[in-house]
Image (tube, rainbow, N blue to C red; front, side, top):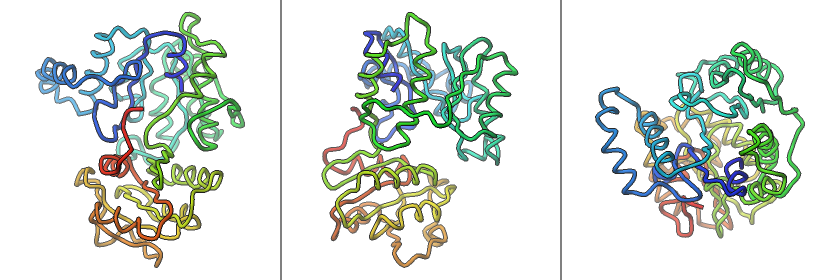
Length: 344
């Protein structure tokens, strides 16, 4: 949303996000155009010795390539999403004009800590002295952690009230996006004057903002990247607000470190049938165990570990087929289904 609002001002704007769904080039976009295959290959070749010498991770390498690409394409400003945590994330080499945390979720616990409080400390690591720090978290105990950590480094705190939502036009669906937009508005309003979109640009940008695989509806298919219980609840709430044609069948490819049973339960009163499957592109270390099937034993839940066969089976008797559970699952479905695309 911030990216689209900035584009409405006529600035040349870069956007760095993760993960990608189908093509790694989705991660690095300038004015709606992903990095070209030729440029990606050229930067990879040029940076490869440094990447290998420093034992950089995949994300560290793509961050370097993205920043090089943004510079080469003459961007005026870039919107950069943190990959994991914040304090030790490779994007934290930047000194931003505005930084912030939208919310705190129980993800990447093997790196960030086992509690939301510990994770909040890591996320607050992007706060910088004298730089506006936006706090979108609605739960006071975790917002207070973010505030304390940011104040300790001298950041200027900007809290978004817990009840604040955006009431303008949005292309993105769901009540959670209304909250996201209110937080995005906070980012926009704290930008330096020479970058700050006016009200018209903000409104137009938010109305155009779109990301693939976020409640994306195409014919009988709905694709959404909900990959934890919180995300699945937001998806379920959005489906109740704008119900799809029924019967609704759901295909869920949930990674093994997630609360699969909790995610299934969020959809249990919406989907007539639910399939559990394994996305082919997921790393072996993160794929669920087909023997235990997460411990899910509900009679309405079926297990079909052949992904292509699962997509076929789920269509039988369905008016709508929902595909969700992880970015890998949605990306694998998107690459197989007609009409979906990674670049909007």
